[in-house]
Image (cartoon, rainbow, N blue to C red; front, top):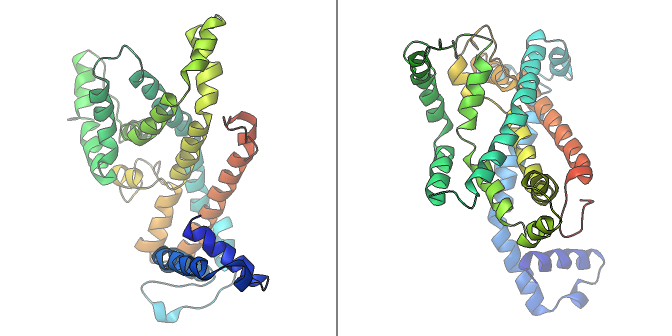
Amino acid sequence: MTAFTELTEAWRARKRGRGREKLGGLARREARWGLVFLAPWILGFLIFYLLPMGTSLFFSFTDFDLANPSEMQFVGLLNYTRLFTDPQAHKSLLITLRFMIFAAPIGLAWPLLTAVLLNAKNLWAKRLFRTLYFLPSIIPVVSVAYIWQGFLNTQTGWLNRALEAVGIPGPEWLTSPAWIYHALILAGLWGVGDSMLRTLAGLQSVPTEYYEAARVDGANQLHTFWNVTIPMISPMVFYNLVLLVIGLFQYFILAWILGGPQSNPAEATLFYNVYFYKQTFVYSNMGYGATLAWVLFAMAMTVTIVLFGTQKYWVYYSGGNNDV
């Protein structure tokens, strides 16, 4: 029994008034030590998570301005009213949702496809290719943005030069509203090595007996993949989907660097988080920025809850608990 479990039982026993009867001296000491070891995490959560969240929630009901903090006044729901009538906020949310619908299926399918390829039996130098594919995911996102800014440059970028070498005119990746989302997705796919690695681990955990049974039943590779592999790795696919959706709600760095402060081209990169950043740190509207942040949190939480509600229809848990 862990110290955390002992601590929980001690608290419950004391609440019922029978703490001394339930726990002996050794158990009480273990519970106290458990609390000691949990204290850094608890303090970190309270100081760096709960306190800032509570403060930002309070700021969302004020007109707090970073430039004039002493003039802060309580304004009630005025910031939320402004948000629901702000056309720029609506535009940024639509851009984010449109990009999410476009990028989420690709961002979910690409790591799965590469994991399947890197798990192939006849692939030469598997470890080398896995390492090479994973490495970009550990590069800081800011560095990734500047790398792709040069790679996709219309005049001097390597990609356009390669296309022109075979007679294909290179598109304006970063200056055309029709191509900027393709550029963002390309840059994003370069760094999905962590999702690939998780999916690869899921593929390698599928029992070989299932594949042998499918082979005996006469199933071809496509049927085996769809009816055996996909159900068995569906928990990992679900996990990647949740992280992907939350990450797309928080999409910021690539859009800010590649689109610039003006959200070029033609405000096509004015994502919700970019608009939040401008309001909060460029225009110093901390109160309104806190409101934007809490509405974003509510939207992301709602979508996550919906996803968890749908998993019982398509996520298979081999332990038999499919009602999580």
